[in-house]
Image 1 (cartoon, rainbow, N blue to C red):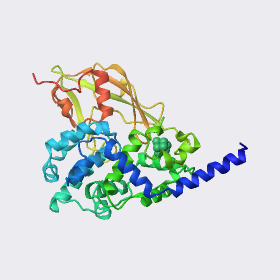
Image 2: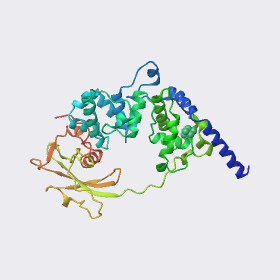
Image 3: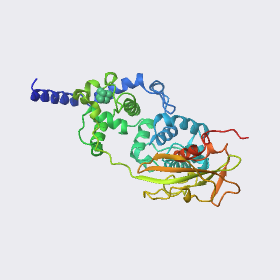
Image 4: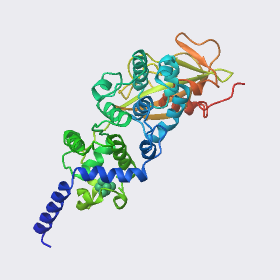
Length: 377
Ligand code: SF4
């Protein structure tokens, strides 16, 4: 076939695909979801839903905040621990902030934990009921456009366009959107808005998420198993992985610093609390230098905050949203009282401290196993 004919044929197929939208997408997806949905600790399954079981808005809100920048697999155990400790929003509101930060440690993006607590306080003060509209939810701390849409759809079964990274990928492929993803957000949202069904909008939102997570994956999508394959234009193009179209990423700036892991004879580790505002605000850390972008920044034991037999214990790296960090880790045995602004955390208490992942890495580099749960002696 001549190239011009091939192009015409492809365009005709794409037009046909678009014509099949949008109703078809929802019914195909819901039928697939009824059989292939993921079992998640906060989810009401389609079968339960059909029996009249309704999701608990508290659990949906909690899971959505936890999922904001973390994977489902990482969130599951944190979610279970939270609902066991704080089964409803009043219980979470009554908890000390410090305990919530400790339970959150390891999930990253710690401003989310502070907002979570502030939101629980507000909802509990208003009688313990979450608003059931996107606008009402967006007024609460830590709830933006995505999370408010997700809670509205999933917890209250109201139509809302829920667009996360998984959904962006599915829609970009389904419609072969060639605009770079950063500029295609409005177009993608319009497609989703047109697809949301009046019946079961919550299951539809979850079906889209599940499809993106399990079938329409970033690499090697499993198109043969996809309920949308007959109406997906990326399949026609032959290379779905080309979508979404992304502009090349700029390298993250590199910062450096040094971390000092001081241990007492009984195994206690010296810690301090970070300022409430800013990066990792309110979390716990071992003493460190500043994190500088200068190659000649202070990263040797000469920068130690107090004298000791500091020895190099290795280098750890950690990638934050806006920069990559490299920390030289030093280890020493220290006697006596904690310096001002610091405290000793006993070996059996370390695993319960509000230590962000970067600090756990630093401590583990100096004392392997120290951040794992240990029995009191
Ligand atoms: S057919 Fe393939 S590319 Fe299209 S939505 Fe399904 S998995 Fe994604």
